[in-house]
Length: 211
Image (cartoon, rainbow, N blue to C red; front, side):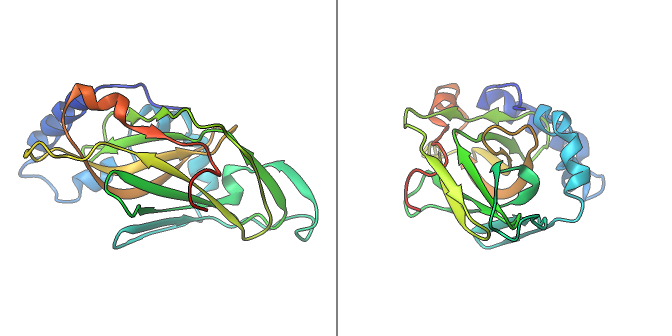
C-alpha cells in the first residue's frame, strides 16, 4: 500500500540523476514519469483503471481529484467503510508554513465511515521513489460522511530554511484508512534535503484539525 521509505537525500539524488539523463530530450518526459513506478503506484495499479474517468486539476495552491460513483440507497443507507472509488481527494496549503490539508469528500451517494490514518507517500519531480509520511500521535476519531460531505487531515513537513534549492515534491499518493487503493494528488511542496528531516514528515488521522 505504501512506498518503501527512503531518505530525502536519496530522493534528491534519484531526482538529480533522472533530470540529467533527460536533458536534451522531450520536455514532457517528467510528466510521463508522474504515472510511473513508485511502489505505491505499482501496488495500487488496480485503482488506475477504476479511476480512469476521474478529472484532475491544479489551480494555484489548491489541487483536486474527483471521482463520482452512484450510490445504491439514495443516500439513506450505510455502506460501511468509505472506498477510494467513492471519495474525491483535494488539497490546499495550510495557513502556516509546513502544513498541507487534504480533504476526502463522499461522492458515493450513500453514508460511509472513515477512521484511522491515511497512507501518504511524497513523490519528487523525478517520479522515482517516494518518502512515506510517519503517523502522528493523535487519536483517530470515527467520522461519518453523508453524500457530498467531507472531512480532512493534515500533513506536516519541515520548511526548507537551508538556503538550498531543496527537493520539490509534486505528487502525494493518498490512500484512505483501511483501503488498499490510492489516488495521486498534484502538489507543490519543497523539502530540505536532510536525513534528519525524514521523521519530521508526519500525517494526522482523518477527522482531526480544523474541519
